[in-house]
Amino acid sequence: MSDSAFQQFAEAAARRATKPAPAAIQFSKITVLGGGADARLLAALCLAAGAEVTLFSAYGSELDALRGAGSIALRGDGPVGSYQVDQSGLPSIKTTAELDRSVADANLIFLTGPVHKQRTYAMVLADHLRDGQCVVLAPGRSLAAAETAWLLKVGGCTADITLIETQGLPYWSTVNGSVLQLQSAAPVAAATLPAGRDHMIDGLSHFLPNLRAVQNTTQSSFADGSGLVEVPALIIGGCAVGDGLPVVPEGGTALPENTTFRSLIGTEHLTVIEQLAAERCKVAAAFGVRAMPTLDEWLDCHAGALRGAGSRAVPDHAASHAVIRCATVGSLVPLQSAAQIANVDVPLTRSMITLAGAVLGADVRTSGRQLQNIGVDNTDIDNARRSLDNINRGAR
Image 1 (cartoon, rainbow, N blue to C red):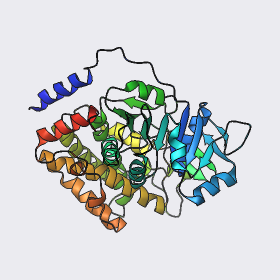
Image 2 (image 1 turned 90 degrees about the vertical axis):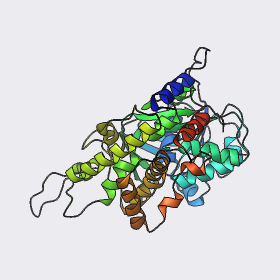
Image 3 (image 1 turned 120 degrees about the vertical axis):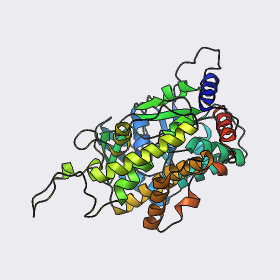
Image 4 (image 1 turned 90 degrees about the horizontal axis):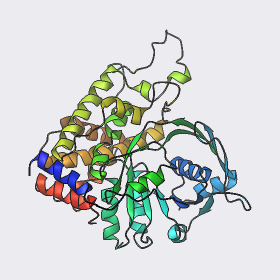
């Protein structure tokens, strides 16, 4: 099947439903899995929007910190305020260490945290999901929905659920104790699995207003540029590669407001990012996806603004390693996996994976998401595209 024929087939499949599109769903009972910064942000946003919110964590230290603080405070952009935790008699985020009970009545479930935690949640959720529930991977990066669907299938899940893969959150957050300082983030791609359930994205947009619905999770996965932006920005440095910070006279100190994630990206970084983006677009085209973000859109989405409104803070050393790990196993490795099936050479992507593994001291290549590990035929590009189309139709 030619690329154009496959694209026409995929578009026709997405339009196959003849019934009128359903109205946006209203999510009233929400469970957030995880106790990290993203989980706390999502819990507070959902409570601010009037939902009943439960936050699950398997870690006692996370629950103790939340309960001890008594609230999650949001400052900066977004719904500024203090959102109560485990308080009776007023709207409050309920915390729990009981996974089964936390998701039993929820109509919307967020899977947060790094890739390995999202995988764990998917495996343990298989026995506890019911028809009609919506599971959101935030942020999902590449192949998140497809891998989650595979893990749920392996775990024996038969419920008719909707998976939503989003490529980011509505705010960048900087953590200071129980306070999250927010900066508005750029629009991000989102898609449902099965495809065509955009009313679910409309409902989710009540809490995450920066979502941009795309055709299916194949397109949203290729639209993920976290690996091509975050990995070179955080790894490549030194005298030979200048950052994007203003020149500071000898003995001077850069102003904190100028030290942003985007400022890490200098001219040389941008050259690397452009080449990584070109490799990603070439592989995407082989899979019939051509509506890809521009380089500026990828930079806005994953690096934020250079300064001021919409800027992303520079993570510390430990947080940088966590970002590099997730961006590699959840974005670069899946791209290389797809490239191998499509017989497209991606030398720079391979090099960045090797470099990330050296920095982390781990074999990120084998631990990353790969198409052959989630039931996609890896012997032929046409078969692989048909497998992904079957996944998008909900044949989990």
